[in-house]
Image (cartoon, rainbow, N blue to C red; front, top):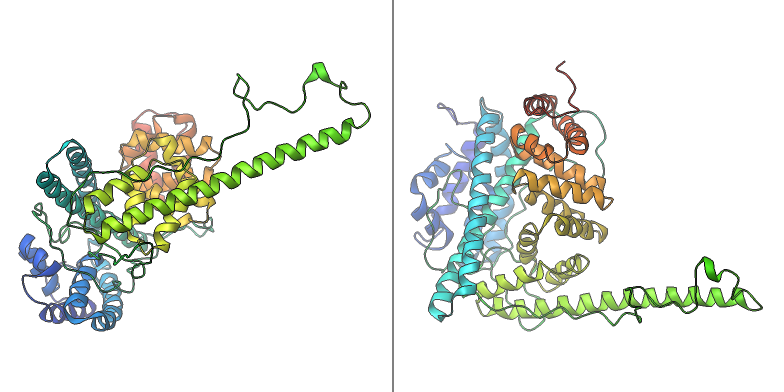
Length: 487
């Protein structure tokens, strides 16, 4: 923020934030974590020289809920949301705001990648460790690393929204479900009631860039058996150790008998050699019976697969709920890691069951783990979510995958196109253009220039004329074919 008098909206939100922190016990909860990790950054947010990310405000409201009760937090959250939106809008109209937001976005993308690497290293360490004490320590570190990733991911999405609000969009209709996010759309506030974080060592970080890393404040659901916890609890979990697995997916019912070639054994011989051989009296009826039998077998298999998916999801959610209730966060994370590798059609069912059990926050973790799948399986997972009317989850999965190396993003786009999902590919490539430098998008295009160059140029044109110009220049510098000459 430039020196001088603060915009009235920013000043008003800073006053609100100072009043909020005066109601909190110093040195405890998230307020204590932020003050310990980056006191200067916290001071900058409280005096208004920086607008904190929304996840930080959520965390402070969670402290208020824990210390003062849910009613106090709900009342404060409504006011916080209104003031925050106005503050961000005023802040972002200042000179140099676009450049500052772009620089912060680059930093958050690096934070996200670093946190992901820490998670993977810790998961490997948990799997290789036998001592209970070490597993507990690593489980706590894993929970903190995941919190870092979630905060970075939330901030990336928020920064995208703020940049989108500053970018005039062409006056052409957007495809349903693919339009830009609303400019800075924080939730109405936290879902209250949650214990303050109590886990072990916290890796160093910064408050402003802002205020540490982590998507949402910690909320531990109260799960008793299969009963639901509080509605849509959110946040990382901090206590507990890793290790262990999840209930194995229940296999589908046996398929009909197979021939040695791997195809179904038909009820009667078929093919050109047998044309007319069974067309005597009743032949037509026999063919109809055969078709009806085939259709019946297919429908029975599909029903069995749906039932198996539901059973597997319910078993995994029950196990996850028990682990969460016992504070064994590391093991709970392993359950979600293993579930992310399930066949694509089962993943929307699992997400639905998680929400039904009050474990909606774990859907975010599941999507993150799915974002690490190989390109073909990731594309299949995204399409399965869209087909199951979970378009927002499918798009979030694709946005998260943009943090992968550019060639891998290109392979995901190719897999979506091969699966007959051009809208998914277009959404992914637009997310790539928004999140990465033009040179990185050009590296993605180099994997399949004939296909990806025109699609990337279309995506960039949908973002802004300057994005299209910059990408075209980067593609020409990479000597890729199919780029129109400079205007």
